[in-house]
Image 1 (tube, rainbow, N blue to C red):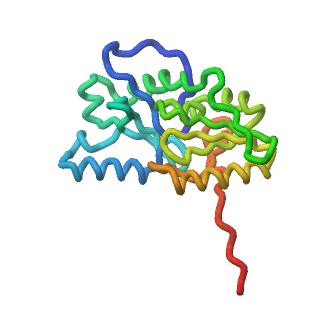
Image 2 (cartoon, rainbow, N blue to C red; image 1 turned 90 degrees about the vertical axis):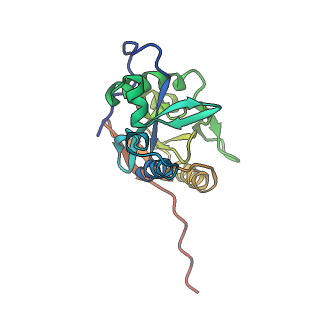
Length: 209
């Protein structure tokens, strides 16, 4: 399924809270919903209005709460007078600020002159590049593979250097294994319409004794 890219849209329902999109795995969505039910919530108070985004990924919504961001439930949208489509449009409009000057940051590979892109501000907008693939490729200097190993982290690496992509894929896997709230260790590439699973780093098989 393809999603609208970042576009200018009319302001929606002034006074409703700021919403941002968040791409996660279906397992992560299910875990959030289980957590809500374990807290005694049910029905729309427990369900998240997520939708398919790409292979192995869903598009959910988040809203600021305290110092961080929490997933949006169906009952939230009802209270704010938003249907899921309107809410996603509003969120996609807001996340564009995550593709400002100098963001994602150009980061040099340790011990190597080559670079990759990183956004890890933790402000709810680190995944902006997922919704602006052409702008992300332009910033990188060519088509990219993207990783979202954990909440608040997006990594992008050019696809025309397979060795560099492998190095970054290993870093994505390590981030997935060590950071809190991991999402996926799979990297995704843009095919002109949607993000497709491109690959992931795996541990080498042990040599036979």
